[in-house]
Image 1: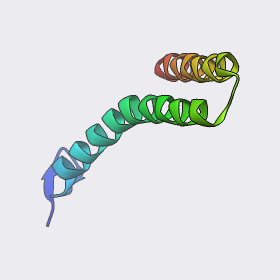
Image 2: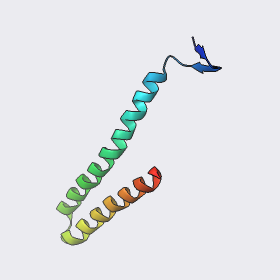
Image 3: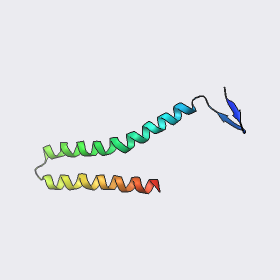
Image 4: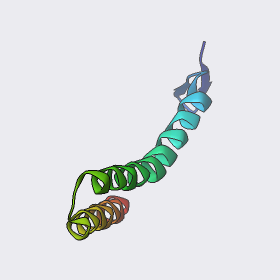
Length: 73
């Protein structure tokens, strides 16, 4: 079941596919940094040197931001 416009076949699932792409983009943009922070908080509970853990979490967040900016370009 396809629609033919200008020689292209459109799937009836094309709108659903685009919606899933948007959901995945939002998940990647928000969930990954939130998980890094959550893991950093959990690591702080198990370590004595909180400064090292905080710097590592901050470094990971900066790395995520730089990678997203480079991927956007």
